[in-house]
Length: 304
Length: 301
Image (cartoon, each protein chain N blue to C red):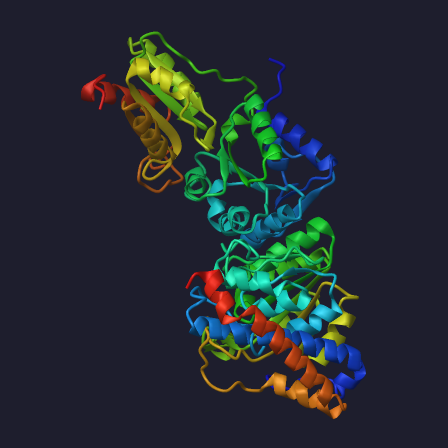
């Protein structure tokens, strides 16, 4: 222990950037908690009025003139409003005009806060050309994503999750000998996949856990394929909606590259409600365990 | 008050002086002659992608290009006149409309997305959401501190993010000149059918210095030179689109013919000979750009 947390890492990166002449824009940044203590109190912070579309356009405009703004979106659901200038301008300007608008979008996800404050929408941005999309859950991963942003000129969607902010540990892939299944976990479900692997081990089911940070570009390299060659079954787990979401997209890509069966596990096709049992929460360890047992029962290790 | 003479200064051409007046006229003629050639190129099938013509509205860009030549530009569709007046290269614009790699965006963007980063001109391309350029311009002014002009139409002015963008510019006193080219039409729906409020009054309420006037270039020139001292500022200028929203068609005669009014103004100053020469020069220059044999070679058609 004694290591930096993800929140502290974000705050330090931000402070470095702002003191070096960068900008940070967002709504109610300096209000209670400074966005879960991820924003430092220093120069370069621009408080936007409560105007999501224009606010996003202002951030993109600042990116267009080279300021490399950090744009904070407190709840990813708001990306539906903020998304227009990001999708239609920032992501297109390079291919259309040979210019760039590298905005670092801190899209923050939560859980249990109801229908429009609990969403995970990174899948939408994977769909459109022109973005880089990542979901770091550890301090080192966040530093790497930031370094990538600073060395590229693409707009970056950083799918954060509040559950990661207190995390100070790095998360290595878990590779089990003669594993029965490989779990590819994204965002908050990475913490749950580790728990699930532990629980399933008690039942004699051996799981690989491969952590997915980069959603786009998603590179199907040997880190992704090698564990599957042994387990011959896989499952991609994502806190966003399963249908047409990151879990299905990545499952298809992995399956297509390896020929092995890879399932998807995400949110059920229902609205997230505020109170249990209708919250439609991201897959937790219990649900992951159930899904793994079901897959193994369905056909075991039979390749496609 | 939508008339050709609303808030227009008397003897404006005389006040700005013959040199400036003739330079404004020259830029108007360049845009008109360019688009005359473009219309023919569309008719002949050389240009097949949608075109958004500035024809009828070109006095606005011509006047402002002399009043605020150093401003960074965020225009939207109907921006050929802004591009040409502020110093964009006509051949590169033609090539963009033809879809050629030598176009302003390599032939990838087209008529409503014109950019310019040559000849000390910085004009950022629009992508097609009307009014998107307003918050972008505001953000660019915030990020760079550079004076910025943003052109948009009376329809775009109704977008919520346009009004919010103007509000942000007011709060932070950003150096942005907002110019609403009010041709009274969104496609073909007039302003009175769409809304009961005035953008100028909104600007006033936001604490933005503003002016409501017709598209008389002399008054626009004088007004912009004053307003640039107290940015952010807003101009709503009544104007008449000569052609369809998109395409080269014509719905009928415009409410007024600004080009003819300008000619009369300059003739009244004894500049008939000069304006005839300018018109001939512009026509000749643009005829060579739109030469049919050249177009056949460039377009492969």
